Length: 439
Image (tube, rainbow, N blue to C red; front, side, top):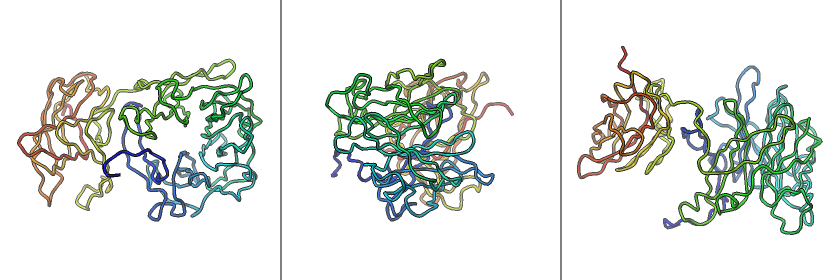
């Protein structure tokens, strides 16, 4: 409001942002999915909280599903042929409502998590809240079978007896054991020995996807323990490239900006299992995150909304006209950059021979500018530059090409905007690519 950051209440969240990575350090922004509201994919909904994604093969075709909470009153689902859309509402209403069998005593109908098992049967886990006087055994967590279409439920929801349940259902499977994970509640009274402390990620295990369940302990303390700023403790556990990871949020963004409460940052850490009894070793949360699992290839076409770090950059959705190549999507995410801003890519592998040229598709709404290419730091070794002219309003996008030198081996890459005259540039980059000197 009036340019001032207000406390974030989350009440206006009606979009879900999709990002992707194949190395866990460099991430691509695919833009927002407008889920709820009159113009959203699900106009019956008002919010799109706590999403969960799933994949299933239906009638021989890949289908992707995005489950979301309409505040605490129900759970909806969208579907798409690709992980980034286009997303549609296949049923035109909530998947889980107050009329769903077995949810009558659930305080909050939200926070879905979905498991697709090896036999292709799928299950949805959800719920939360604390009925009056039931902090120790709220019995508000639920599990249900999903139909083969992934957009219907089968039978009656079953109770998951999670001690001190608050919210944030999670599910994964490791070595034929099912793990239900959740955030414990903030009850301030005494707790029996062995109970989960307030606001921690706890877990239960079972040999079956719908139970019975055994409480095992906690794996992640509240963010306040690590960062000095607390709050609730949403998470997700997943396997990628032979390792297991936990994603979770903390209000470290509010802390870094000295902003009001409610601005969260996503964190990522490895998790490890005991191979004998299956227990999960406790996670030590940090801001460093995880190792990059592979080097970045600069010789494939790269959307400019891909980055490991950035400064002064914002991404925007752009609807292209019919003049673009038929092989390029008509909807792309661009990186908008002003003077002094930069995009960085982690551990870019230029190879032994190295890069010989760099090309990019750029629009410039300001004065002439310079796009500098540097290694390892924003002011690091200079390897090349593009002189970017102010764009013609009728032909805003131009393809640029420049030679590159001294770009061999593995380095962090910085793409930095500088000015070449008194009128500052306003550069948008759509895509870029390096080429080797080989014919």
